Image (cartoon, rainbow, N blue to C red):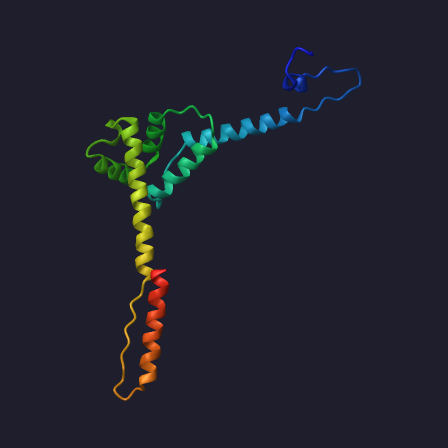
Length: 166
């Protein structure tokens, strides 16, 4: 046993009469294997729900792939699993974006097209959120209103403008 690396010696168990053997690493290996199998099953059984967008299904799919390290699925297989799990409308969106049948693209082209479409959507949604949060302030001054009210309104507008610029 002196010729073997330390990690090998830690895993070798010699049972003796009346002893109980507990190997936590083995129990953990089983739970990791079960988790891996479950994640791989979820990836292979992927299907888009009725009201989900392309972005709402692609990002969780990528997360599952990251969590299922060592899945050994090629990029082509990932694209096929994902495409066939989409509803017909989303498939047509991808076909239109591809300028033909999405699955006729090479795996790298299809993957990049998918990534670009999702990133563009995320960027657009972020910009829309920013635009909708900007509100225009219109102040009307009564002819009989005091000058100090107008100055307060202008100061408020200036303060808001500075916050938006920051």
